[in-house]
Amino acid sequence: MAHRGEHYKAIFLLWCVSGIAFSITVPSPISRQVDEQRYTTRRTPKVYVEMPTPRTRLPLPVPLNSELKTTTSVPSTTSTTHRSFSTEKPLYRLDRSNGQACILLQVDAIISVKYRTKLGEDENVDIYVPDDATVTGNCDNENTVTMSLKWNAFVLSWSFAKTPGGERWYVEKIELTYNSSDKHFEHIDQPNKTIRLSTGQKHSPMLFPTPVGKSYACSEETEIPLTDGKNRASVLLRDMKLQPFKFKNNEFAAEFSCTSLSARANRDETAPVAVGSTLAAAVLLTITGYAAYRYFKVKKVKYDTME
Image 1 (cartoon, rainbow, N blue to C red):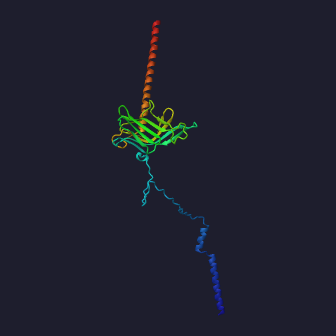
Image 2: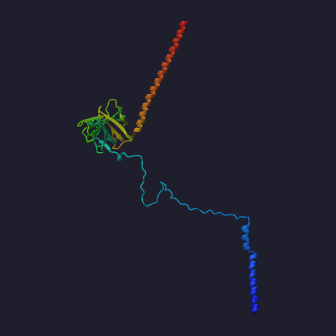
Image 3: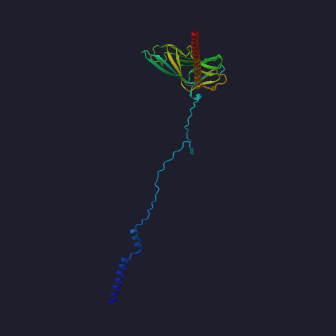
């Protein structure tokens, strides 16, 4: 029995050794495939997969004109270039005895006065025409009316008239009266004097000529010089609207813009220049032609005499 057991052990050991040798000498199909891939010259293509890269999303700008559906109200920032005379500028009004408006003036006005101090220095002071200035005047005449604005020691008077044909109205004179002792004139050399300055000089042009029934309107600043020959001042008028000789209602009539007045003035100045140039050219041609005629005429007479 012992001999038989040893025989079985020998057979078992031989079977194990043969199995190990077979596994070493005979390559498996899997290992053969791996070896073929390792030593072959054929390359398997590489596949690149492009992965999307994350990007940060910026907030989109909100259009200015987009409609926002919210329950809260959004205040509008839209502004207009037109300014209302009736709400932004003081209105000075002179009525007739029946209570109807005769003169309407709406303006932002500044009085600029020059004076000399006791030390001999020249000074300049600006005085605003107040909104609550007292308005007085006279509208009894059909072709001439006046209006005065009074405050403290100052009076600014306006005189209006119509052209001879009654087609246009204009400002005939602006006059400033003040007392030199007013608090605005510090250390003035001549106090306690009543000074009256105006535009009413000889051959002075008509101011703001406008068709009757229309109002004069100008948004630009206009400077009107005033003097008495010695003292000087000026009236600065901004955003002005003016109409005398009213008879229909208490509101400003259709506007006559100062730009139209400037264009007409340019045309009026251009016409005389053109006419004068044409006349000068005609005279020059006439003189030249006459001189040529005389020259050849006299020359011919001399030749005839010599023969």
